[in-house]
Length: 319
Image (cartoon, rainbow, N blue to C red):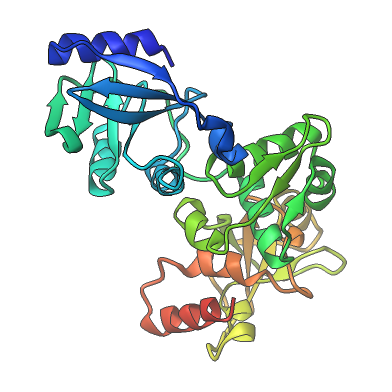
């Protein structure tokens, strides 16, 4: 982010001289903070604010920013402000709801600590990810299921069955959201998960793993599928299921639908099997032939049945 642009915007908007200077305590910060932001101390209107400037074009989400600012407050006793290159009306609303102060050079300024709330126009930002990628979501659930506290890229490649690039991107997403810290040199870097509220922090950015559903007349033998849906929920709770549901990766689902004698049905028929085609391979996180409970919670999180939500809440209480 261009520091001169910030300084010029503030000076011209407030008709005041502004000064940006280095912050001497930056070296004390955890790596996930120092790696995500550059910091400067802003002198303005006889006050000093700590400016947090994201190092990448895609700024952390409002929920991640809230957590980062809460942790920054341990090192900076005064007010903290986030700088962003662009912002949407929705994001602005969420930042204000969370009482996060921000500056968008040339566009907006929200500094209630100084009694300032100035808006010019909304610039169209680059598209931001609303949810984790399938690989990052699978990795996070894998970490939670196995109670893992530290990973290296090789571990991720083995767990997800993916390339080094995919593993690095998945770890990078979790790091950007403040869910893990990168420690060590580039080749030997380890990612450490320390947050006891890891699920709570990540849940708003996790989505239903089911990409598509289909009804099939029967399930062929010898294919790696996992119990899911209401049938799986019945294994974790008191809910009863009246039909079979299986989860499969895209590749396995294609294999099933190409099997001789397997037909895709236009609607549910007696004895039909519900096939869930997942965004990531359910085998990564499954437990003894059943999809993991966290993915199951995500499948039913928007279910309107009160009985289902009661059982989902009971499952979450056991984590």
